[in-house]
Image (cartoon, rainbow, N blue to C red; front, side):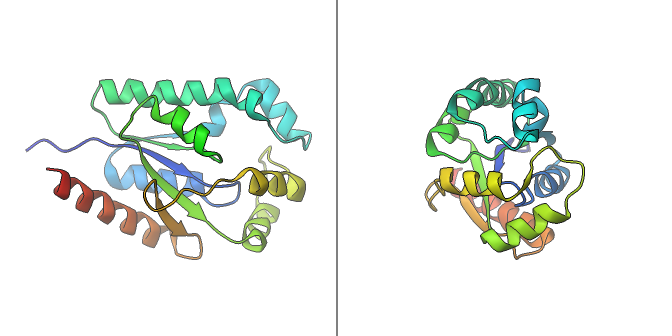
Length: 175
């Protein structure tokens, strides 16, 4: 029996654990993991490193690149997990151009917990409270009809296991 492939977006603001959860989810599912941050242009990285938030124009080409990766894996019927903030509904719609059946895992947390996590993170270009505040202003949280929402107060294992169980349940109801 053939295993179903999935394309999955792990989304949330910086500090929510997208990369960590995404890697763990990909490992659990036997999927490829891609950190969306690795596909920002040098100009975008420099802008964020200077403490300046990205705008919609800055993100357009980046989101097109990620959507193309989803499309490539869909065409090969291969599983892929991408960690990407996906802050606005229109960003997620742009990513869905790569796979209309894109599964979304939204990692949600309080501003206080997110800031605490960011302050302990070393070696990342995303800097501080101002940029977190900007992301929280831009965030259009997905509803339950669009995404599986998971609190970052849960352990990574709990989040991955709950999401994987939901994916399996969804696949059973679709087949």
